[in-house]
Length: 387
Picture 1 (cartoon, one colour):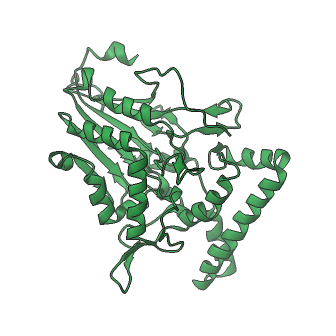
Picture 2 (cartoon, rainbow, N blue to C red; picture 1 turned 60 degrees about the vertical axis):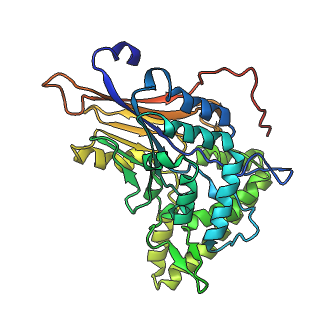
Picture 3 (cartoon, rainbow, N blue to C red; picture 1 turned 180 degrees about the vertical axis):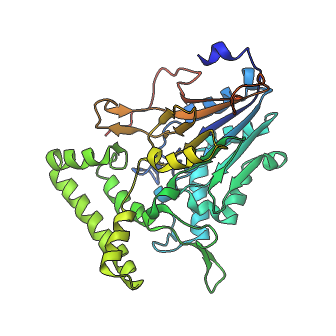
């Protein structure tokens, strides 16, 4: 057990990895319930950040890695100049302002964390917060921190979408493995004739705002059920009309948007169909996709991803580790082994030891775990989310 091993080798640094927090515009927008808000654990997040800034962690170096989708810009279509095709920088900035206002306590806790001794934050941009590649949004986010602490906050917005906090560990959000969510930060911004920057999102983002968001008002769980195949099968049996409407709209959207695009690229019918099928590979088995990367690179001890909202910790026979940090939003599982509803506030913790005995395996100084945050404070009640 971790607490029984701590005394043997002093820990010089702790790395925390969270992903898929999905801060939106808040539960109430303009006096009405916001069906698109998925994050309801502000108090728990504040509690989490305070815990790793105090006690045994007060004087320890602690690095918080936000591994994508911290903000959910796709769930904030409330700004007056929201453009459905190309998303302007003013609109993106207005959406970010709504999020910051709705979750003031979390942002304040982040700032307080960064102000601590030997504390730092790394923000990896995902697909739901892809508009953070715009410089004005990065500047606004950094303004949430004291000026003296801003150099301790790093935003990763390059083509690699990955970060190596310590030798042997690779962190990436995971949307890069799906064609529907891939984007090149350098090629995804264009300037109109008025000098206004616009973000060109991947087609998967269009699908979220044009299909998922509209059906979410009727069934708030539509984007939170796993496995997806069982969700569709059960939906056809128990919620037939809604599921048929959803499937029809999904197919219609895909055909109209993607097939037209592919044919305009002068692809043959066979190639267009083959490419389209690959684009539909959503929520893939990342363990299988990344196995070659882990097996063939002796410089990697652990690969940590997010994106799919499925918490996973797998340790291979060779000692290499695959971790999916899950999400801090509610999920619903139709797999009997997982239970019906899942409120798992999961995060990865990497303890880097000061020194180890000579002759031990490579990366023996790393201790990795996938934790579930239960909270240092127990509240006597919690907000009822309803159905």
